[in-house]
Length: 307
Image (cartoon, rainbow, N blue to C red; front, side, top):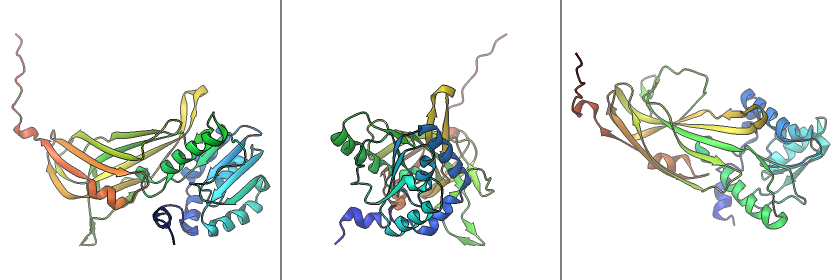
């Protein structure tokens, strides 16, 4: 009999189908960003742990410099896939693929770097935050400090009001959409600038839930009927260059249950709450957007006249 977390894991992250992992291999932005960050973070001879290894590609990146890599994967199909693929590649013998639950596994020795890519936009669905927080507690109990370097090091999450078209060949369907960050979509109108609602630093303790209320100044007339969620992953901080190696998830656009008409200059108030690793519908159900101030109803300001 599966417990509640095991049942949820079948749907929320730990049993992602093999073909989805293949899509991730073909995502050049993701692959290049992680390869660069791992090359920077992993020093020669390092011990590395990857939680949620999938095909094993990130562990393989680490094996170029590391002396030992522990690659933990919960899905038995992916364990077989990772072992098969690693055996085809140089340095694959440095990677030990471990069939285990990332919520429970600890390496047999201290490690220098922990890689974990259980990441979804807004940190919903997948268990990145919960897995890392659990790991830190258990690691400190067994090995003491210091903690390893985490990759990603941090995550910045933002939200933005949109006017989103939901017409599909005449069929109206307000659905969740995922959009590439480099593509301009004619049916998407940005109604205000994005606002950061949370910054996660994996080197510090983190909460497992998010509750936010913020305001936006509307920049154009229209109907606000969706909210875009933006997630920027700071894979590594390159201190000597004062720069970072980043990876930006696809945008996630959630339709509002109650769209609001807005005019330029109006102040929009938005609120939502959800837990890290929770479902998209739970976040969507909590979304609220209301016009707090209507620009047209505010008294006109008289500017002083100078001779």
